[in-house]
Image (cartoon, rainbow, N blue to C red; front, side, top):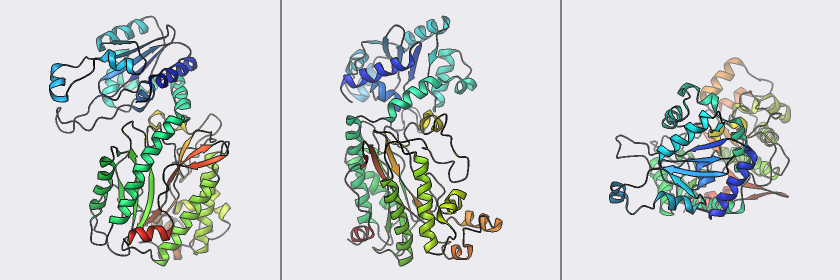
Length: 462
């Protein structure tokens, strides 16, 4: 964890922003895979980690803003815990490590919250993504579980999102640890992927690399020769010469900061000429979109720039026609690029998505575009110094989507459907890097991962 002063200052700023009331942070508890004593690997709630830093289960925290009191609640370690898990710190000692002077039992938290609600004091809490915490809140606050979502504190969401969005120097350093683990994961995959191998042999190597470096996956590995399925977690295909595989994977450090990187690998060591054409279109779009990153620029405009650049490249290949900027504004490029250009990253790989993307990536005046291909853009608002963003354009040929658009003759003024048919079995290409928004533009995070055709082919041929 960071030094105690980091968490003290974060909570101080939060209290100042909220002004009054009680703030309740629900920590996570272990979740069984198939029976109680066989849980999934534990992952603490990210906002709890941000303000309290303690990464163990079955704890919660309360900040009384009016009385300027902070408490961490949980059960003291039992002898059974010590027998199976080893020596455990008393809760008060753990609380002291993050600058919290008061610790108590969960029963004491129930009493404290009952007193607050009985006095009609506002209890602020964030959206809940785990059913067990929804049930706990129902009991703690006497709110029916079906109404928990409608009683979350928008004021708290906005305050937390504003704080967590701007990454400190110590956070950036930790993200770069995750980036450098990601470097090793991606280089290992480029060297290992060979014709005749199953995808799971490479995905296992990717995950094993993260584990061997003291991290773990920030999300399940996407490694597939069917890159047209954007979040493809199936790894059962046999790779053959001439295939291309998308590797979208990232690491999470021991302090839970994340990376998220994508590379596209030629199986057999060489891209075909057709693959090079599409790859270079995506590479050009990614590099120019990163160059457009700077404070004050709305990310939705960079997303649209990506659409224009992809449209221009696809026009050169005869897949699209007409004015590229006009085609992008009309959404014609979304036949080939269906998702958002990028998202924030930090303690979550899709940072703060659980708080609600419209609160994190949009504002009261910058609204989400409901149009297909734009509605999935997680970040649309103006960039600020300290934002960490992914930039990840791609070109994907999805047969079912092609069929639907072609049957409707959709946006035929921009799309050459006869030429598109020649690429029906192409798959997909995606490239993704992570950047920090700086005072004068942007900075690539982590050690640069091979990306040019020559670099990738060299590693894929070793």
